[in-house]
View 1 (cartoon, rainbow over the protein chains, first blue to last red):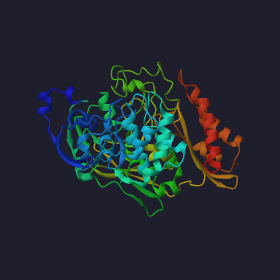
View 2 (spheres, rainbow over the protein chains, first blue to last red):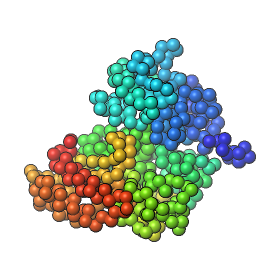
View 3 (cartoon, chains in turn blue, red):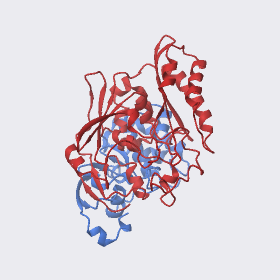
View 4 (cartoon, helix red, strand yellow):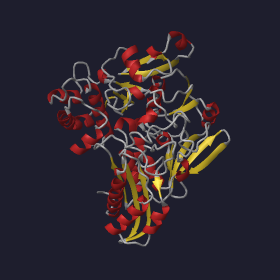
Length: 177
Length: 328
């Protein structure tokens, strides 16, 4: 988005300090007011795991965990994340050890093209943190904010169903609060 | 998105003193930022209110609840006191948006979300709500999702909120603060009909900030139901929605609330229809008569006459489900 506003104009607006914990690391940054969290991650921090799908909060490809809660990074201003604990898809694994939700997505082949997958996985971890899904129907309803244009929904649902107990036991990992 | 200045005040006083015609308050930002990306809204200054102390839910002396304007939609829907005493409100909130958006969106912001009329959202076409006096392509255009009640020659948009339909049924009170001090607005008066000023969705002045929403003690917890009809099973705006709440003694109705969403510029309620239900016995005939009375004055457009039929059936089903205990 900042690319559409020329340098001279940008220079006439104040940059704001932004301190956050990003995938476990403390970061101190400066941002222009209109930079979204999604653009900060992808364009400024080279964390391109989080995807830009619709950029309007309709597809869920940009889902990240903000203080353990799933949010759309495309509709979040970076400047408003000061002090936050942010987890992206890059921060879920512990070294080489995949997060249980990642393992389940691999096991169930819960993707085709993979573009929606980081958002699906972060959203599913957020779902586990919420602790509100107890049936298959709950999982379907509470994953409605993540679209998959390949239509891998049945495998995504199976993966989440299998991983939920392990994720709940591990709540606290992956930004779980 | 246009460039804008940003500030983050630490008190409500400071926030309302910063506000003006070219500024907007931002909390969840889920609708505002989307509108800014579409160039529908171009504020010069965003006032971030997320640092204000408006996140509490507490009980009032009158037995109701006071909900801070910054409580997220998800936290409100899943708050134990809301689930126990105002299940209608929980159901309505959970029927709206997606889990991500409900985590972000605030209680106050939900009231202020703008119509999803596609002409309003398309900055390349006229729209009286976006550019007063430019015209309304929806009135004679693709108006399948538009109003069947209370529209004007200038605007046929609907209010998109589910939460507000339940708040109207519960007779919530909106607490606001401006530079002149605080005031309260009855929920029924908060949103406007479009009339000849469709650019104004509600009664707030430029400097006024919603600080809290008050729920009266009566929550219709035993017999209420929120029914939402949409084009897909989840994550879509209502074509028609119904908030139905009953006060029953056996099969006899002592009180009723009946509010429609997706059909007007504000949650649509007719108290005479509710009053006519009092003293009647729960039955399909009773509820059908109420639906017919409420829909008698509907004014459908070329492409949305289906909403009248849909609303009639939805009202009967919502009232029936409410009478069964709302768990259907």
